[in-house]
Image 1 (cartoon, rainbow, N blue to C red):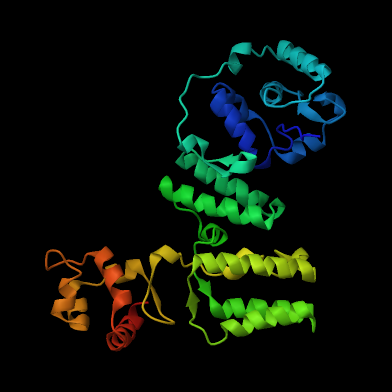
Image 2: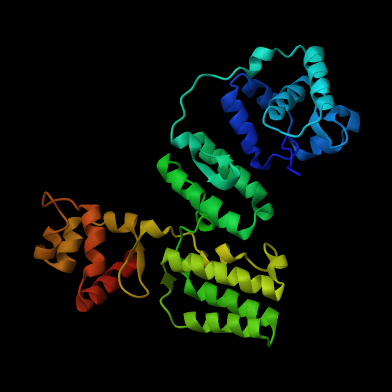
Length: 334
């Protein structure tokens, strides 16, 4: 049986966002209606247009208006529910023209959903991005690990599209940060200890050993996400996924365990990454002293200021001897 969605079980209120876009007048009702979960728990069955399912609350004008709107997107609803909703509309004086759609043309951004196959968490504007971030953080524990990875990753893309800055922890959940290999090893050792001398415990131990002695920071998003998926499978087999958020971070937070956003970092050889903003803040004379006039000329178009993008592209290509000098000189600015 298809689950009927109304304001009592609308995940992240994504369906409500669709309805208020579809029926703009409805926005006023949504602003004043209390849609917190405890608002519905204390209501009697008679406060719902569908008492048996406790769906479509009609205990006040605001909720009656919202319930009528949600009903328009629902299927397999008994005729008695429609009769109760009509009574509520008449009682509260809710006009039918509230539900007349505005003739708007759809754009590509309006159809961008964080969970497209479920039509949940639509982000068509900067305000939607911030709203979705709050909703996803609130519903985080209820999402599957796969949905967590997809929604937060797509949220990061949407944030960039609408020029919105997310919180540092959201970027971690989106898989856009670099990995501290030492922290990752510690998390793997903890999982190994929790699993004991078992095949799964040894698998965790093997992953930990692979990162022992590696560069302090790791940034390969495709492999990072693949590792998070592997850890999730092992966690489920070991039965320790129930500890997510208490004794253990979930796989995404295990792997993406720093607040350093990957695209904001430049790698200068193994075990050395630096913020782009700190590199760009250094004057051209610093680079001339470090790299020599000829190489410094490649990162400036006017001979006086640094072209940041040219600098970011040049640094990872420095020869080993010059890279070692650069690491030593830049260490004081990290």
